Structure formats: C-alpha cells, structure tokens
Image (cartoon, helix red, strand yellow):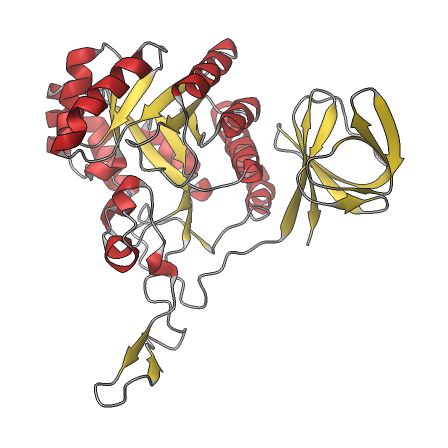
Length: 398
C-alpha cells in the first residue's frame, strides 16, 4: 500500500519524501485545484521530480481542473511540457483532459476524486478509457471500497485517509464562487463553509439572528477533519493500492508529521499487525499535535456526525520551531535558551528535551545567541542530544 503525500512547494515535496512518502502529488499553475496553495513552475517541478526519483519515490502531477474551451490549447502545451520531465502519473478529473493526456503521452492516468467515482460501473468505464488508477469519491464506505476492488482488481484504487474535508459532494462546491468570486474548483476556495452565519428577519433590517441548527451552535457547514488511522489496517486488508494525505495550504510541519506517522503505521500493519494495535494510541497522539479540526473517520464507517458545530477554528497544541537540514536547524518560529521542546524524527518517534545553547551561523561566522528568530540558521545543544538523523522537526507545546 503506497503512502501518497502532498507537495505544494519544492520544500514540501522534499520533506514528504524525506519523512517517508512513497509518492507525492504536485500541482502546476492554472490547471490544478491548488491555486492558492503554492504551485510549481516547470523548472521547480523538474528539480522536484529529479529529487524524488533519486530517492526511488514517485511524483504524480495534478491537472484536475475542469477545462473551458479557451483553455484547451494551453492545457495541451502544459501536458507536453510536464511530460518531458518524466513524472509517474497525471491526475485528471475532466474526461476531455483524460483524452488529451492519453493521446499525447504514455504516462499513467489517475482519475481525481473530483470525478466523483462511486461505483463499479464507473471504474470499469474509466478503465476502458485508459485510466490506471481511480481516486475514489470520499463518500464511500469500507464495504463499498472493498466491492469495487474485488470487482475490478486490476484497477489501482486510491483513498483519502487524512486531512480537511469539504461539505460539498467530493469537494465540488460553488459556495465560495458566489460569495467571494473565488472558484473552489480551481483551488481558490475561500472556505465560506467555515464562516459563521446569521439570518435577518424581513422587517428588522440589520438585526441578526443566529442560525441554531441544534444546541451545539451555528457553524452549519463546518466539516470535521478526516483521520482514517483507526481503519488503516482494514484498508490494507481490502487491497487499497494507495492512501492519500490531503494537504491544501498545509505547512511543512503538517506534511512531515502526518507522513511520518502514516509511514510508521503502514510498516507496522505490513510487518506486525498486532504491533500496530499496540502503537495506535501513540500514533494518534502524534496526529493530535498538528493543526486540525476534530477528527472523524468520515464516510468509511458510514458515520453521520461529520459536522463540527462549536467553531470553525483549528485545534493547535504545538508550534513548529525549526526544520533540521544538512547538519543545521532552519528556524521558522522564535525560541530561546531554556525552552522545553520536542524533537520529532522521520521515524515517527519523538523525544522531549531542553535547549541549552544556540549558535547562529552566518557564512563563516559563529555567534552564540539567547534567542533564535525566523530565517536564522543555527546549531543547538540539547540536554538530551538527538540521535543521528538527517530529518528532524523541532516543536514546543503552546
């Protein structure tokens, strides 16, 4: 079972690869659903693909926008330019885009979750059209996924297992377009579903009344976040080929932690299922340390409590301080000598420690400092020195 992680930028691509992803998915400008999430230029994409391939990992290119007539020629040029970089797959939603990619390349074609594939007949139809993988609609249960895999065993099946969910059908929403002129189906969603809504009585203009759907509150569209870690072993047993982490507008820290946790979980399930059950509470605890809304297993267990009515805010317990690269720490948020911190490893393990000393590095100059600030490059002495590892995250409890 492949672990597929998000790569909104070149840095995130490298972090996903370094923290255990088997493959990453990346968007290019104009034709992905990640327009506000950072996208790759052709030059950046080449660097990313070369890096991933040097580590034996795959890169899938997201071109899952729904095309308009005036965009078709530019889409063809984009496909041609990206194909020369030798990616491992194109992710499309538009059936016309599928036809264009098939006619112009031999690169495998994956059908995006935006295509809303929910049944065996549709999977077979896409197979006949030349697709090699289906990213199933998020509205399916474990039972339905198993039925599809059994009926079409030679079609690769991909399932989302972690991240934000949309209140609309497989993410195909127009609410943001109407309210803000930002198209959700081009990655510019304003997340209007997370806002707090009121009604106004016809004869009392300006007087707002809260929409009380029930006793919880007024966030009537606000979805919880998906976390399928509790069901990962069942997805493995079904024979799901790839599990996908959602990552639109997510941080390097989020990519690192979620990737490392799911990597460790898959390894445990593959090698020792009982160990996965024993380690599960610890793995879930790590996922609780990234910014998220309350977790749900979504539709996988036919759950109905998918909405979160209290607030649209995220749960944030930890602050990302620094990323370890090439023997030094790249600082992202301030920290000081004496701070109690945690070091998170790409293995999915973490240790608690304390900062004893900070040395700032600027060229050949070394300066001892009391506080590190964003964009500093530093070396750190801890009370418990971390084990040798090329890939680490520094964080602290908020």
